[in-house]
Length: 185
Figure 1 (tube, rainbow, N blue to C red):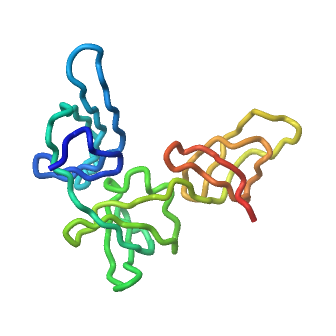
Figure 2 (tube, rainbow, N blue to C red; figure 1 turned 90 degrees about the horizontal axis):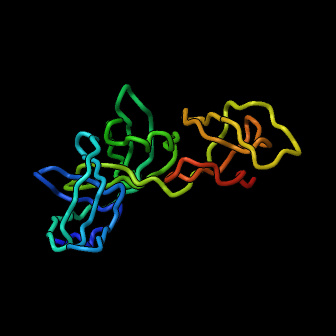
Figure 3 (cartoon, helix red, strand yellow; figure 1 turned 180 degrees about the vertical axis):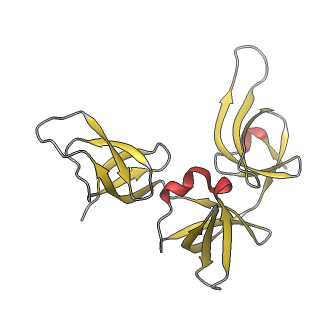
């Protein structure tokens, strides 16, 4: 058991016999009364988002999960198939559990898959990824500070500076879905 003020974003909690990953966390200290912890959670079994408030002194059950390196193989309908790089065992993760991570999963890349009791329950995406732009308007030179829409190889649409062209690779912040920089060659 862990006190609610000790939990962190990304941790996995067990609430009502279900596993939830913390996707956002706010510690709120009102001027009057006790502090509370407001958490946005995602169920690792159904993918449903929910929010929950904990009293600062409340005990919560945090679960120990470990990451295993796995290679993404392919998608089949709503299932994404991964292979353990050490044992070559194959695992499936549902689209509802992966949620926004599906926009950052590229074929033949390796990812940290979260394991709980030998069952994959989610995926850890790095804070930034490099992806190729497949569709955008023609580039314009000399105009700074403006952006245009661009579609990435996974289908994610983002805003990029006007000088970026289709076919170029860019670095994307996976937390905010925003352009960071042109990828270094």
